[in-house]
Image: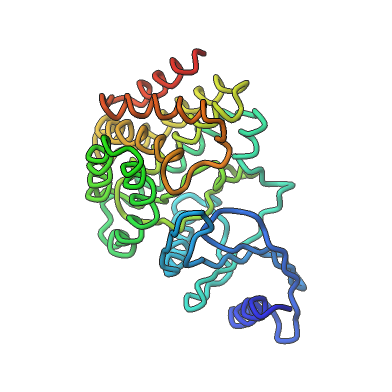
Length: 334
């Protein structure tokens, strides 16, 4: 057992998940860039343990505080109170060590949405449920002063989301730096509901009880339009990854956004949609020219298509999400 695993074992014993004489079996899992994750086999149960990293696993020097781990636990627990089974159950938390234990979701029962989309399997019901559940979580936390105080993570959200995406894209496109900076400012200063911050197909499991959200490290009380735009952005980009299913992805875009907007009761849905439609092309550009480009867009011609559409929409913003998807559909000629 390595020292790191000994640290994990000590934490599991302190949480009451492992017996004093128990030697857990650890298997590192692949995942995102911000944490180490293990499947851990204990005597009576298999669990998942996640520990936040201070330096993210990307080429750029991207440092973030590990205290975000506690906010992730809090988001998961709150989300499950609002929509049961919308996130894995938390089994234990060691805030000092920056790690927590949660239920292990067996791949035989839980499908990773990113893999489904990669393979061209577009489940429109799942897309609608993602929008519905996200909207319900936002609605339940909108205007809640206690939640706002608990998740007052402005600096972390800036460090993990606004700077590496919008501000970094502005450095790559100096003529758009002011526009992208304004988008970041608008997002940072809009305070309506609890935001997950990383609603991506790689962080969504399709389980027997509906979609389950993972990786809420960016949890922040702010602009819910960010979550909507962030997720829809991936459905647009998947059109270049799996072109044969592009029409299906665009249908999923419409179904997800429609089911989400139907839950917006804390503000004018048109106002939220306008912010999401303005933000979406900035996020598109960020996924090719920000600090965290999507790994599956490697062809220069595909990257240029993203830049072309994103730059045009940033220069002349639209108010409807359907106008964004329409511009993308026109670029793809489908």
